[in-house]
Image (tube, rainbow, N blue to C red; front, side, top):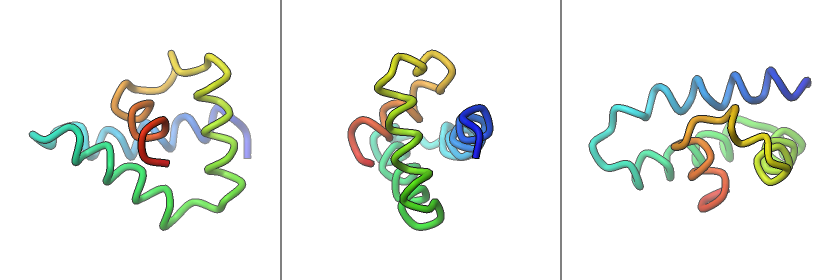
Length: 70
């Protein structure tokens, strides 16, 4: 899967949880969703994207979910 598609999918998940009042809980839920529904290779790729400096394309809450909980 292409990086742009993974970033888009991650941000779509983040958009769903962004409205939660507890942003830490929302970040945990984003990571939980990725753990349940994304293949390990997809999770590894999104972690690499985030750590490689491409995080500007990731929403803040998604970046937090990846770095803290994934």
